[in-house]
Image (tube, rainbow over all chains, first blue to last red):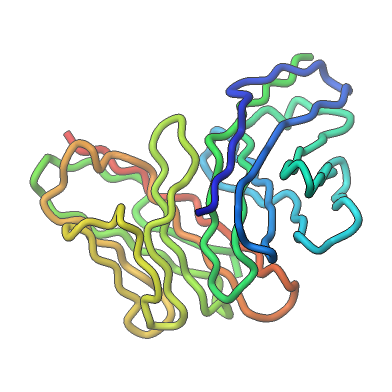
Length: 115
Length: 116
């Protein structure tokens, strides 16, 4: 069975500083994908970044980067130069890389950016 | 194309009533997913369609829940005899089979159900 664990219920960061949100996963699959989504108070899930299990380089998307450590089964999200608009819930998720794979989500981390 | 849409956005109902939600996916997407999210938790998978075929259902989807996608376009999720424990945000997502290899799921704004 697949499982995602996010151990930080809440995090605070000062505006313009970097922050790391932790995510560990468990799976017996060899081919899988790891995702991070942002959920503002409005409720919509916004895709941020993806990392494939066979990707050798860490994924980056603008201010977001994914610190992928396959041996440790961790996929931490790094947000650089935090902005007030980054305040939201962040969810780590994974799925098998086959047709129609459902997403398995962690419990989320609430990030608050302080001015 | 404005993305995935869901209607209604909010639904308040009394215990024992039936409710139906609608999801319109991104037009070229052939995969459609339903998730449920309770307060303080991550979304949980409910069911998944590829075109009109319902290919997977979670054990969370009790007999009171039914989902359809009759023409492979929009989908409906019906809950019969609602219970207070059904109160949650119901999220719909869609994805395609072309383009990026990981077939990102695009989420709608959700339908928030409150059962009194």
